[in-house]
Length: 341
Image (cartoon, rainbow, N blue to C red; front, side, top):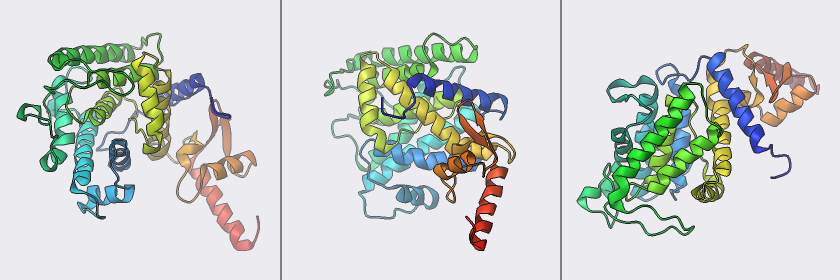
């Protein structure tokens, strides 16, 4: 463990405390209709990073221009723009279905029809310009593979293709078992992040589609998360080596490293996007939820430690309010104008 890095159990406890705060004091996740801008920020970031994990080279600015203005800025191959567009279409559908439900809402957390629809949305645009060279017509977006997959470099071998439908049904049953535990308030012996790691890895081991399994698996995991009332996960492109190592260890049923990565990602989304937008100006939240382009987390911690920022020490670190941070920033501006420090 790196120096200064909290133990895995501490990370899990921080997540549990943050989720309890979200449920009991802040009213749970906002719906897309209630806080569209919250989900829009997450949407941009996820479309960028999840496709970048698969080798896409568009930068965040190019992703935002494509999704908000429909403009393909830069000179990247058309395939890369279509990868981002497809993923973004699928992610928007996931977030909309997760809270609003509508005609698609199943009795459980995810259905086979929804899983295939996610793949269809994510892979349809890129398939139109660069279909998989080995795919048959029956393996188009939304359809299961009819090819066997060679063993991966780390040694994991996906099941033979005739076994895929049965294995998908078994995976959905596993998802529902976790869902019953979480919704019934009777969590099993394994921490929630490691249950999620098991679900995510189990899907990737089935590898039900000829292409796009990583993207579909992360989108499916986020649909499960937000239907449970939990924040979605974004695995950042700089975390790719760590993510792949964690997946390899999960192949051997060691779910701790992947669970910790997912837990940290959920905490980051809570602090960066959700808490700052749904907490009122006088609500105590972690300092990380109050960072903006004008002030960094280091500056807030320093101000809290020196007593310059109205803050309290909670179980997981300093807490303050948006109102207190606004007051502190004004005091800094005044000190700057008068030459004080």
